[in-house]
Amino acid sequence: MGELTTEDIILQKKIAERIESLRLKTGLSQTDFAQKNHIDRQVINRWESVKNARGVTVYSIQKFCKMVNITLKDFFDDDSFNL
Image (cartoon, helix red, strand yellow):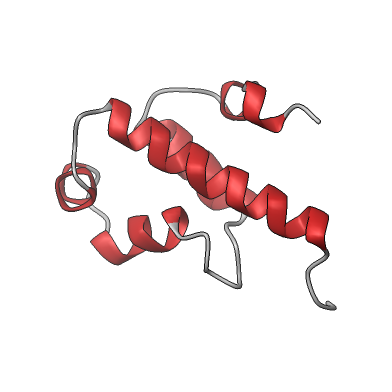
């Protein structure tokens, strides 16, 4: 896979920001959210990082959605993803 395009980078940033926004709505810090969901805090940090060159897989997004009780459709059905 080649380098990320500008469009890819924008999408990656939107996904990271959406994850952070939804986590913040739970009222939990990264540490507390991770403990509650039995995952490592570094995982949450990586998901929320706009500097993570690998980005987040759709499988990770789906896992996160289950943690905050929304569907994958709900995750992407946000104004921030409208072009």
